Image 1: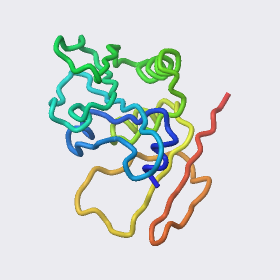
Image 2: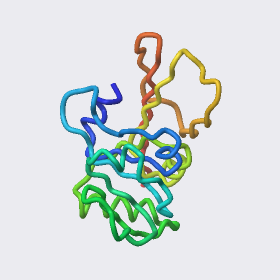
Image 3: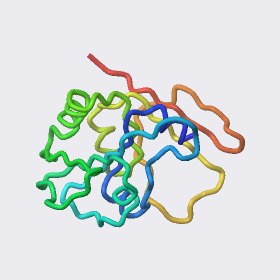
Length: 167
């Protein structure tokens, strides 16, 4: 199901810790259709080049505060910007204006998700809850309100939260 969601998205975004700890491919390999543009937040350009998202030749956008490395691969694109208070509104505006990215699937990690939730600049959150508890891990961010709907997926559960914009 997650790979179907990826196919429906324009981009998929993760933070530095998720990229480093999980070494995800961030593609749509288990469902037909296109793979989204991969976006990695790497503020200090500290991620190693051997990660799957850098070494498989697929287009990847790296958001950083640093200058673009001199000898970077042609499939890696860099956007240098300030990670200050207006980071999320600035980033989302650039991604729409310059890249025409409308649907961005944010897969984590916890710090990235929490900071985005705190800004209120999100539309929907999908929370998959499995039957098997994890022995170790990082707690999920807290979502405001109650889920709009809850669906059973076999033994698992999907909770869908909608963010209501207040004017």
